[in-house]
Image (cartoon, rainbow, N blue to C red; front, side, top):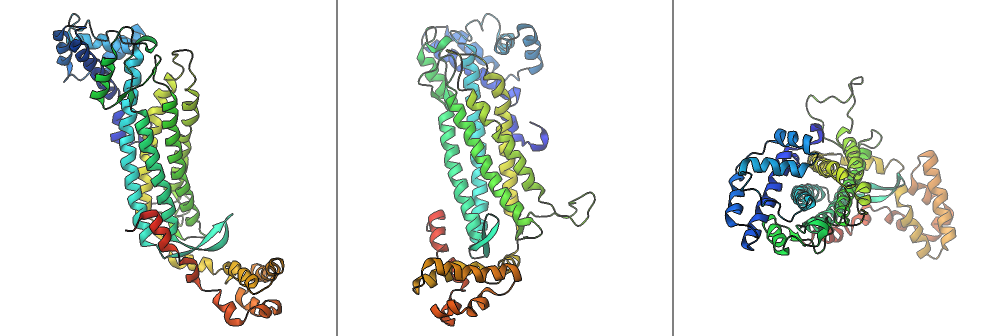
Amino acid sequence: MIPRYSRPEMVSIWSPETKFRIWYEIEAHACDAMAKLGVIPQENADAVWKAKDVEFDVARIDEIEAVTKHDVIAFLTHLAEHVGSDEARFVHQGMTSSDVLDTCFNVQLVRAADILIKELEGLLAALKRRAIEHKNTVRIGRSHGIHAEPTTMGLTFARFYAEMDRNLSRMRDAQAEIATGAISGAVGTFANIDPAVEEHVCDKLGLVPEPISTQVIPRDRHAAFFATLGVVASSIENIATEIRHMQRTEVLEGAEFFSMGQKGSSAMPHKKNPVLTENLTGLARMVRSAVIPAMENVALWHERDISHSSVERMIGPDATITLDFALARLTGVVDKMLIFPENMLDNMNKFPGLVMSQRVLLALTQAGVNREDAYSYVQRNALKVWEHRTDFKEELLADADVTAALSPAEIEAKFDLGYHTKHVDTIFERVFGED
């Protein structure tokens, strides 16, 4: 992943140094388990741990792989250079490359999930704070991009909170599902290695044994993991898109924080562009691009092929690093986002009173007017407001059909803004609990 969209903690998970360290731990723990079973001498297992403080030479491993054309063999050869060829002769006993590769990959995904879960929790805290802050800040709700009925900015943040809270649950479930390891040997039959070795290695690495592997861990687990990343990315885009719409000049109900010295355009000094949320929209597309390849990795030939390997070498780092960066960026956007309540009220009153049309419609039906006629009465007055920017309430008061059913006081009562926010507390309690 390019440095521009990377953060060090997540990047380090996917470094060659981290990968080889995990490979080493898998092999060393496997030797311990085999020694306990009496399969290999204890002194050989102990000898492997002589390399526990070694910084494996990535360039040297690459040099060996250039000859062997096999990454795991190259690593094992380099390990023997540190441990001693005789002492290391039992390393990888009864194992196959996928035992190392797949178990390592899942360790990396579990660690990546730890970071993503932490980032989701930080985003949730920011969304909750802004929701409470603007719980009763009234703004117009829109459907199809058109004014609908009043809502609040707090409810906007609250629905994003609820969505991301579901994503937190999904991420935890995905992490649990991917946290398996396999040390089952060729075609997964344990013919040359005891299942107790797998149990020991998995326990040491914080995994659970894969119930049944072939020569690989089943890729439906990985498909579910990357699908979850895709859903989280889509939710990021959902929030980013709303903020981008709010920052449009014609709307300007909210905006990204614009720092001192920041420039919006190389040509037009007046510009304040929503560059962060536009960037998040693009990053979400890249994370989702990993989902289909992960799904296609599920179908492998017989007990194993490597058609999935090249895919995972790319999507593992790229998707997790990008999503980590996107979550952190979105948290910053939400945390410092500017909110303009006055503009919200101005926008709502752009067509005076028009957003109360449903209340009048319902009042007419309750007063005995059939629904078709009631809709016609309300719509013809609403269209006048659309076309001439007149006041909706005044148009209704001048309509004989409407006033025949409703008194002026009854019409006036339908323009109470508080009517639309009376259940905000109930919704907040559903989302955030009683606190």
